[in-house]
Length: 215
DNA sequence: GGTACGATTGTCT
DNA sequence: GACAATCGTACCT
Image 1: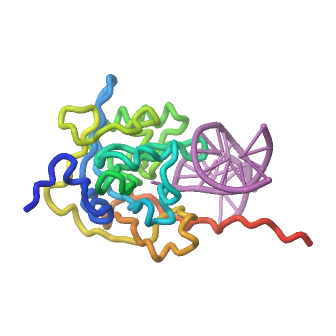
Image 2: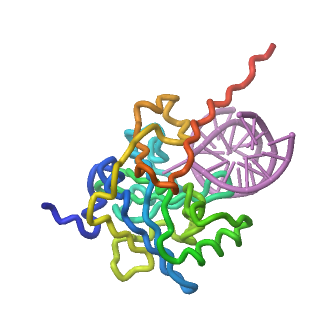
Image 3: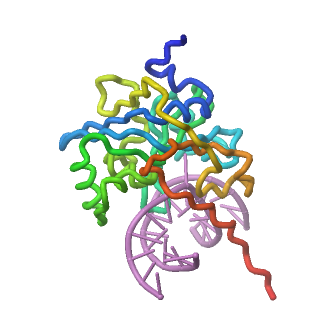
């Protein structure tokens, strides 16, 4: 059995890591308290080989973290409104990452809910981390956490893989990815735990916008 | 320097 | 079920 502690867990093929992350717990310690959630839904992005990945077109100012060490967070802002959280995987430079799409808050639910309310909307516990942007809010993560390591046992961010198989893992097309050229079926790299209520609802990517023909 | 668009969410009908 | 919000980044001229 390989030693998968520390960065070794993340220094593997991204699709492999993604599935192993299901059931893992991610704890975020902040001055106001700690929030722990159990990951129930993720998506894999395979760096330069994956048209849906931010890294497909090479290294840029935004995605530089993806090209760094595995086991670090890649946080980016989406639509100027939300934050999405990834964990860098594979060997350094592969620019692979796993998007954390949803989780179940197992500790610090009160704090997570307070954060959600502060962002404008209060919902049920089930909804606290149901969806990538909500997950980021629940954990209190934003761009300032881009590049943070999750492999330090004493750090503010600690990701602990599940010790036992988390349950039935299902897979399917990724959500909201328009950069795959419409070939969502070629990358069935969305993984979630069967029967988990915290898994976000599936929404197919909207068709790419086209300039209307000049009639 | 300018423009188009996005790994989503919340609200409105 | 459909659409607007909102701004940083990437890409083009």
